[in-house]
Image (cartoon, helix red, strand yellow):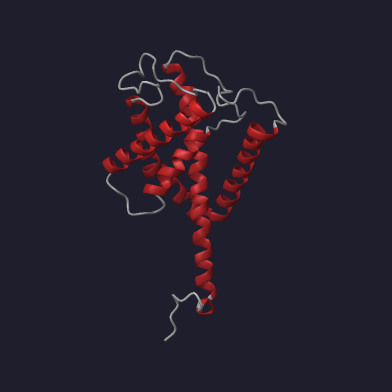
Length: 207
């Protein structure tokens, strides 16, 4: 009997099995790219149309300094949540997903805030303001209200956005793949322009 698990016996796999493996890898990566895009967009929409009005600030469509409606820290947070709790794993109870997403958000927000504060001498956000200053760290980098908000966003990702991806993938996976990776390429070009090449002036990246 031939052992298919052996690294030296890959030739015994049928073409159909190899195609399924290949498709699953493509779906896995496309799923991650999908939540990366949705997370970056959702974070921008939240800060511009919810966060700013709640703080009594005007709506700034140039928020983020990239020239597009996208915030990288939210995108990275969405990918982190997906890698830990999502990707078609057996769903955990909603309370666990909420608490886990909140803890991940706290870790990411505080670590990235510290790096920018001490390495770049930039404080990109400060929660030591009325309405946000309950249970805030002395440096203003995290607070209970924001952390719980991000936890709820993570829960919505796992309960709603993941289901949306699955529905779109069932409808036409290859169209979804082309659109998602086309947008990833566009976002990558924008990030390279903002951080390295500065071909197009998009303003202050830390706004």
